[in-house]
Structure formats: structure tokens, C-alpha cells
Length: 80
Ligand code: SF4
Image (cartoon, rainbow, N blue to C red; front, side, top):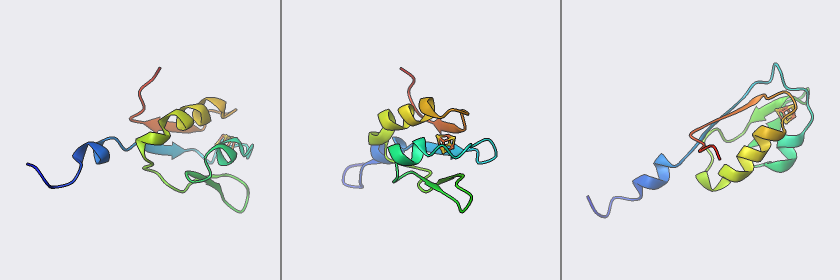
């Protein structure tokens, strides 16, 4: 159906989950993607935007890989 928005855009959105029980407050993800990751009062990771644009996929992949405790999970991300 034409003229009702861009369904591909919404489908392209990712889901980001971070485990603040295993987070060691390294700040790497916060520094890399402050629009997606923040910190709570103890410095542990908080996901600010759990469904970021797929345009951030590359940076999310880097953030996930650079997390020293593998506390970040990204669903809907194509592995390279
Ligand atoms: S990179 Fe990992 S350990 Fe560091 S703040 Fe983010 S989730 Fe926590």
C-alpha cells in the first residue's frame, strides 16, 4: 500500500540489551554511543535507547565487541 510511511525503516530497528550485573563500568560503550548507552548512579550501564536506528549497526557491533565483559547484546544485527 503506497503512501503509509516506511515499513522498512521500523523493521530495520535493532534491539539493544545490556546486563548491568556483569558490567564493570568501563564506560567504553558510553563513550562510543552516548545516544544509546548511559550509566546509573553506580556507573553501571543503562540502555537509553533500546531500539536505535539500524544506521548505528556498525558502532553497536564495535561497542558489543569492545565490552570487556560481553555485557551487551544486540538483536537484529547482521554479523559480519
Ligand atoms: S562496555 Fe561493557 S563493561 Fe563497559 S560500561 Fe559498557 S556494558 Fe559496562
